[in-house]
Amino acid sequence: MEALAPWPPSRNGVKAHMIRQLSTLSILAIFAGCTSVADKPAGPTVDTSQNPEQLSPDLYSNGAKPGQEPMVRYGRYALVNTAPEAEQRDLMAQIIDVSIPPNMHPSVQDAMQYVLSRSGYALCPPTTDHVNILFTRPLPSAQYKLGPMSLRNTLQVLAGPAWQVKVNEVTRDVCFVLRPGYQLPDTPKPTAPVQTDPSSNAGTRR
Image (cartoon, rainbow, N blue to C red; front, side, top):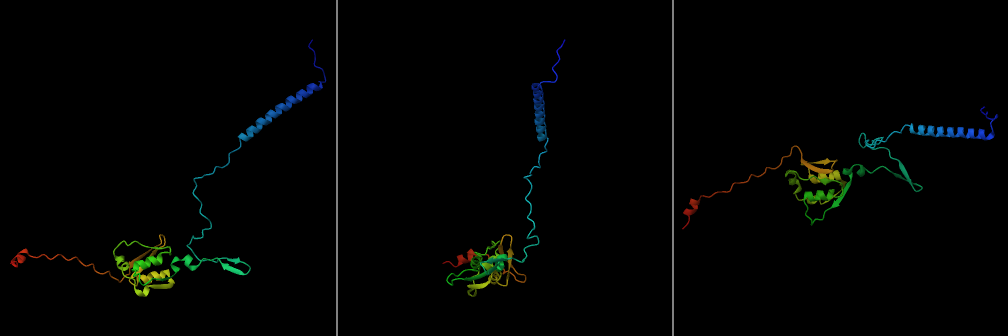
């Protein structure tokens, strides 16, 4: 006859059975953890090709407009206005005060370049000979002392009533065009050389 296992089971057998169950549960827990990590959805990716976003709010959506600026306290009692000066907002409003030595004998173009040298603007290159009529004129002695006056007025004084000042704020170039009602001088036509009759010269020879 087959021998029957002793009942109740021994302590060693119960302990071995519990160890096997705990080992099985540990293995199942490890596999379950791996599965949960693998099934975790990936986070959203960053699109580096996206264009830069515009700053908001846009301070210049309707152009540059003066607004209320805060006051900054310096020291105990001094309050300083942080608003930019008028000539900083409008470069044509900056004040010009120059004196040209009388021994320089500059042209109108020389005076304009001197006035614009530190203003942030430059003269337009003369695309036609029309503006050279103005540029090559000697500077009047009454304009050797200019200012204090705004750059806007200084350029118009140098140009005179016949020329209108055109300012390109994109390139900061200053150009001059003839005003309506004024006419450029006629260009003198080249005269043909006088041809003499050789026979008349031969008759005078002795």
